[in-house]
Image 1 (cartoon, rainbow, N blue to C red):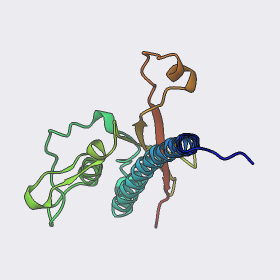
Image 2 (cartoon, rainbow, N blue to C red):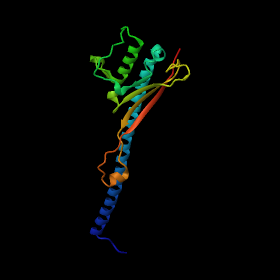
Image 3 (cartoon, rainbow, N blue to C red):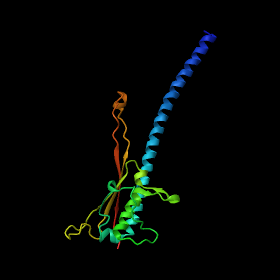
Image 4 (cartoon, helix red, strand yellow):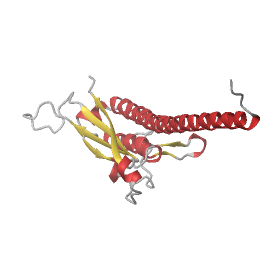
Length: 195
């Protein structure tokens, strides 16, 4: 039987340690990739939750103003991109008398821009979502009556935002200098009328 001397034993142990380090490095790289994917999904989930909360807030405000929804059609064609958050709308809270159109404008402003009044400061979707926007369209159920938004027609509330895109594997591999395209994400809610 051949015996190993001390130099051969230490070399063999060093080789085992190197193999173990390579396996550990590959495992840690996989773990880092999984962590990055988890962070991206968490961010997307946060935006979806924010959009759902804001849509629900707007739906509640619309239900509180049924005359504005169906008689005055104040919510019929709203585009958040046309709202100026630096303007000050008529405040329709705390017992102030407002028309149904003023209430509708205030509701959309409040959800889109939020408010910046002292201790009650809150943010709207323009601040909470990257390039956030809101659109409201009445989906008329009776197009024969001449009313652009017949009573009990649902209103489609769409909250949209941009999600940063990722470069493809090939673009990364060849060191592309192109910026990844942002993807538009939407949260859609139908708000039906109440009697």
